[in-house]
Amino acid sequence: MSDTITTPAPRAGRREWIGLTVLMLPLLLVSMDVSVLYFAVPFISAELRPTATEQLWIFDIYGFVLAGLLITMGALGDRIGRRRLLLIGATAFGAASLLAAYADSTATLIAARAVLGVGGATLMPSTLALVRNMFHDAKQRGTAIGIWTATLTGGIAIGPVLSGILLEHFWWGSIFLINIPAMLMLLLLVPLLVPEFRNPATGRFDLISAALSLGALLPVIYGIKEMARDGLSPARVLAIVGGLLVGALFLHRQRTRAYPMVDLALFRRRGFAGSLAVNLLAMFAIVGFAIFTTQHLQLVLGLSPLRAALWSLVPSLAVGGVAPAAAALAQRVERAYLIGAGFGIALVGFVVLTRVTPETPLWLLLVGASVYAGGLVMVMSLVTELVLGAAPPEQAGVASALTESSSELGGALGMAILGSVGAAVYRREIVDGLPAGLPADAGTAAQETLGGALAVAQGLPAELANAVRHAAAVAFTDGLHLAAYAAMAVMLLGAVTALVALRGIRPADSTALAVEPTGPVDTSLSSVSR
Image (cartoon, rainbow, N blue to C red; front, side, top):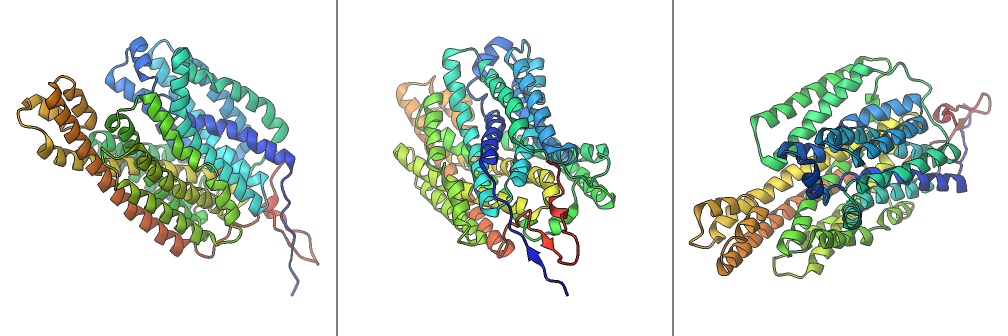
């Protein structure tokens, strides 16, 4: 019997860390584009005059296209090269940004946002997969993934603030033009600093599987988001059911092909499926609850959009170092326990939010939001590392795409379920709180949403208006409380899932080689082109 010698994984040097900094540019911009339109809508509406439906598509088409193409682009990057796909995506993203900035019609802007979604779908899994292959040492890789996670969450928070600042001084197209210098820098620096990686053992790209993955994810996410916005309807349920059926066909095709787009054997690797489930639960809470904090800032506390966006940065700044710190701590403490602790910390944050009322000071809301965001960022960074560590390096693109897809699905479910919980409580509670003597049509409008109630109050006498505002604020915070309790239950589920499914799992060093003294070195885990 031969002895097995394990060589240590090589450590990244200055070039890799500078390369990581460059890779954060597209990630930051892609995540910012999710939220950068928040303040620009009035300006776009005044110039392009979109219908209500067109305005929704200006917002939603980016996220829908990005979510639908993630798996396809992750698999494509594994085949043609992750760096090459990154450069193609950066070119498309920059060109679409220029088109969006100077769009002279609603149709052009919607088309540009769709192309931005295509570019975003190439950039997100490519950056994460390249991080997986640039950092072979587990400790360094954990730190790099922590930085990746912090950049992703920070970009979503920065988007509205940067949008508000630009719109104070420039026209609405400026929010898209800021993408172009960063993409040009990326095109110049990535070939110099980031090595190429691809999976040499792949067959022809499967266009049918690509179409099936799009047909599975898009209807499901669309149906869930539409239900979160406008409630249950047969068409939305049909979209979700149809997407699930197409998803079943996609899985069947992956099982029967010699070179599948997604190797289902990944899900048999210990910790892979559990990590994706934990990531979904974390995104469920962090995205699903965001609407409550932003509405409380603007509609309950009466802050302007820009002031509300600036205050909403506080949780992001407060947790900026959580992901790298969690990676460092994971070198001493088992990750399953840290992930469980992250869910526990988030639970404490939601407990704090159950104490928020219309009269409580702003700091209490910010403390609660900072605590739950810190716990969930800790979870997300650690599970991302586990997902990539469980996947072979040659399948890092698909693994990254599956991570992002679980995030998109979790966020959509969070908005739908927590949003529905809050809306149901609001409609129930405000009926008893509205003052007598309110016109019937005004009462109906006030019962729909908090924004509707505040709009109604503007046309009423001062005393009656104050009563409507107070009743609406109380009903909204009651809904916020129940949503926080629901999020607490999800945090408990996440902690249990982590402890059961992830205990004892450590990310593998991607370049640890089993050396047989009597034979050649097995390089199957590092056979990627540089």
